[in-house]
Image (cartoon, rainbow, N blue to C red; front, side, top):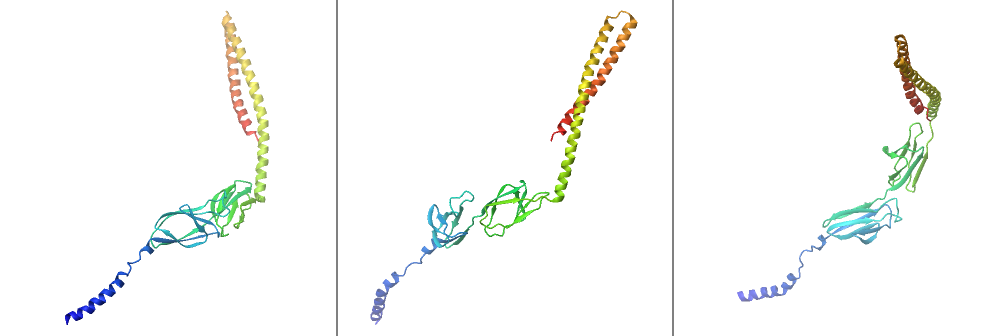
Length: 270
């Protein structure tokens, strides 16, 4: 009886074994790749992964291996000087879904008359004119150009603007202040020129007097040395001291006038 029961069991086992052997192991291949999505400001931009072209933007559900990768998206109108390519290096883990947004700021040359005006981007000081400014393509960036004494210039440029030029208008009160300062400076220069001529005249005169008095003092001292009579010696000696004193005074005036001449010369230049 036992033999009759065992035979059907063995028979079923024999025919069912192939079906067990055909059951596949868990599929782990789906764990060996990641998915990336690449979006950009512009459609149709060339996309490169590890140096190989993989398509154009927008690129969705692209499978890549688990590894480090370098993604590059070329800018529109490539090649261009005013903006570089979008590049990022990343690690792709198994089952990851990564999304990248390639943005290309619009570079704008900002200039003004007068130059050296302060440039503010969204209320943040960015530099002075002339300068290159990077803007987003949203059209929400606000550029303000300011300079002391001038009316501020403000604008929201769109993505098509490449050169922004502002001719600042001078404030009336500042213009009047500048004119008053210019008039005062011109008057000061004229006065200093007159003083320069006067100080030069004094310097020349006192210089010549110094030479004259020094020469007379030397002559009187020579006569003092040659004199034999005491009264003549005292007379020539007193005159030598007198002329030496005059020479010292005139030389001091010469030095002062010479220094003043240098000062007036520097301050009389426009």
